Image (cartoon, rainbow, N blue to C red; front, top):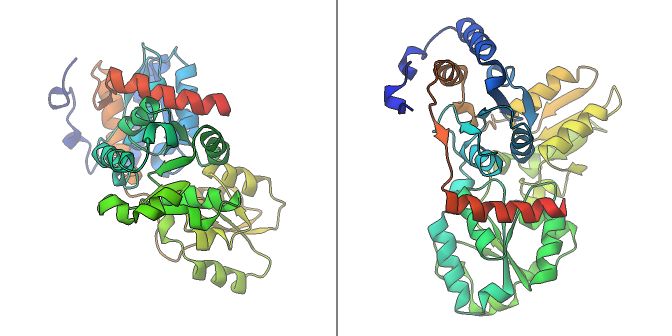
Length: 367
């Protein structure tokens, strides 16, 4: 197998090519590859890429579906790095996972590095027998080594859809939960469960003991990592107030990665798939304002023409790292694959893969 530098076609040959040309070449490469490739498109992906996807959805669903289709030896994941890692963890031994642009990362996932989580675990161990008292719960929007950490320490992964069930499971086993990397998802789910606010603390990895007193650490039943999604963090309560004033009767639906002040003002809260299904099944003539990534909202607006669909923020809230997967990189990876060259393969180390799958399997057993 050739390295990226030795690829049949260099990426520079694709930059600044006309959109129509890239579209036609991707279609031709896909036709040439046939059953040799399965293209996954995340819901937040740009239109000129997701149009080529065989499957669309959230990251975990796409990873599971790809693993169930072992007849496709190559999986091109049009998403971000942690998504491709999850696909590799769950994939069959004959499958190769490709990420068209390795620069497509996730700012929230990057807010919890494995070294920081290890340091947090060690710090907590000074106050309690941590492996007996704390269950680590990691959002699937995280690196493979964090999933492996949870697998090793009796922990589990969660999604925005099943976080409540996962947290109930975790508390049934141990007294406390360390929830990372998104504090908003953890807090919003705990709020919905009626969990006492004075038993939640935020762990800042850049401060001693996460910025907490020993008393607060002992009292806390939920330790929330100081991390957030840069897209969902942009939505503000005043945005909700504006739309309610301008469009009486409008329904507000947001993602649980939003700040609790936004979530508390919304009519509906749920995952991207929940948002898509709720708006799609709503009666014609209804009005919606949606608090999630811009590409998804624009797609809903284009598809649900019998309804009014608005984007919650006046600012552009696009997943900038997801946006790195463009038609040029997709065409580059597909045409190289058609020539027998794999570029940008995502391969999780075997030891991490085993432990990460333990954490994922625990979650999927609950779901």
